[in-house]
Length: 211
Image 1 (cartoon, rainbow, N blue to C red):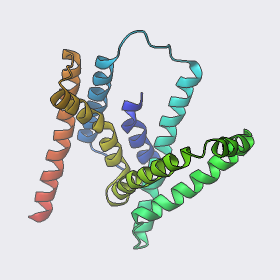
Image 2 (cartoon, rainbow, N blue to C red):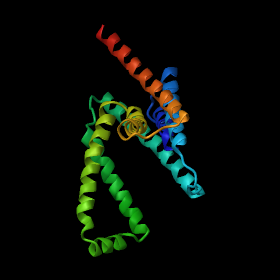
Image 3 (spheres, rainbow, N blue to C red):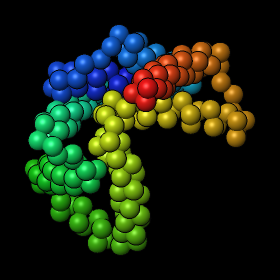
């Protein structure tokens, strides 16, 4: 399901951000989503637990909110551009994380998990160093994420985060000798065709602007 993140991001950018896309871009997104999903299905092994209804609802909510977030990010960039202002990566990062923190605090308080969380930290002080390392790694990773949003587009970010799965599979094949089914290879071929088509379109666009 998360392989299809690009679809709600595109819809959110259209409905909330005022974006416009060509038919080529719709086909490219469909190819990347389809290819990534096929790779995931090709790797799936039997014997796993069945999906719960609540789990499916959470995934749908996650995808919908991905679209809403992308749409508002796109609108914010458009509206600030009219004023001659360009949001910087760390502007996005600071305000997003501030409201994420406030939201998480309210929810944790409502569920009564703040006291139990603090008690767990007090009882297991060794975990604090791991939390700090996790936070630092998260901050570094988010720097790249918000740089992409600020300087490119939410859909570009979604493309990167979706296709990274393809490249991680290829690395595991070439570096660790893992195998992939014919179905998996067909998925990689489909996704790569979408990526190459996008790169070709960007190259042509740059040449036109240069000329």
